[in-house]
Structure formats: structure tokens, C-alpha cells
Length: 104
Image (cartoon, rainbow, N blue to C red; front, side, top):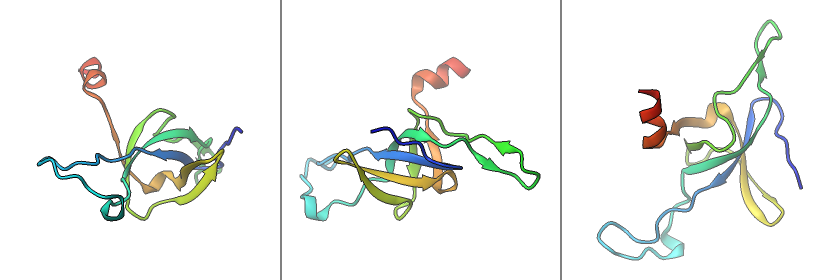
């Protein structure tokens, strides 16, 4: 099934956190917090400004992002748990070292 978000909404897949701490302690499922990092799966066309002009989103499909703990609405699509959120809920985009070197 294909899904296309509307306006300035994005579809995000959570990236699962590590099951061990840095010290090697295994964290049980009941004590884990939901990860606040995800991968953008799909983006809407953008929002409209006051004059009606379409403003494109800063994030794009494939970006790794950080978002708030309670951001978005959880949905299930094709058996996979995903989030739909507005772009304003995104705190930032995580850029890899290789893409940062290309810019410099």
C-alpha cells in the first residue's frame, strides 16, 4: 500500500534503540523508552503561506530525524508501526559524516 501525507505532514519509521547500555547492561522491553529518532518514509507537498504560495518542506524521504517524545500520531500500515507528524515536530536532521564532508 502506498501512502502520501498531505500538506506539511511526514511519515516516519522509528529507529529502534540499542538493547544494551554502554556498560553492557541489557535493558528489558518493559523499561525501554520509545526511540526519538526515525527515518522519513514519505513527505507531503508542503504548507501554504499567508499569500497562498506553496512552501516546500526541509526534510525529504530518507532523512534521519530527531523528534519530540510525544510527537506524532501512531498508525499501523501493512503491519508496520509508523508515525505521522507535522514538520514542525521535527527537532533536527541527523547528517552522516560522509555528507558533511561533501559540503565542506
